[in-house]
Image 1 (cartoon, rainbow, N blue to C red):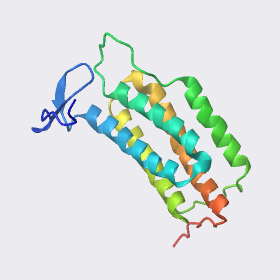
Image 2 (image 1 turned 45 degrees about the vertical axis):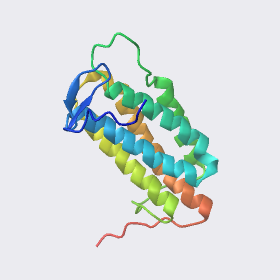
Image 3 (image 1 turned 60 degrees about the vertical axis):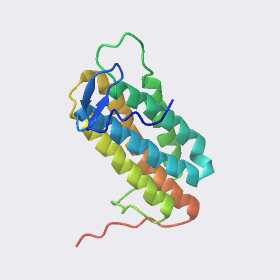
Image 4 (image 1 turned 30 degrees about the vertical axis):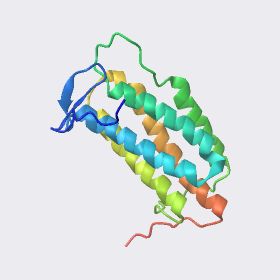
Length: 176
């Protein structure tokens, strides 16, 4: 099978199920942003082996979310899913990481190290994906929204953890 089909050369693409839509369609924007997030997390996973396996688990869940978002409403087959247990796993990891971090008393600036900055960037992409999905106004995406909401929290905590591991200080936001 060739990677190119030429089917999208005029700005159209297919949803899972076959319906052709504009590449500017809200669903395409939503799952495209999830795909962008997945790529950003891939960069982070390659940058530090300690959390790579957990990040790869997240990447698989993001593919599940993308397949749901890329699908028509009435399919004759079952898609992979996001489960409440996936959200709970993120919460447990957030709690575990937070135990080793100083209590946050101020806003902090993204950065401090390359991997921490990349993790903050992934967090921002995650928030954008969440906004795109909220814009679809479909209840069937509620677990995806919860997962992304928790994932952005996880990425924030992970960015702080990377600084801790590198022995670097967080940069506190200075009000003018």
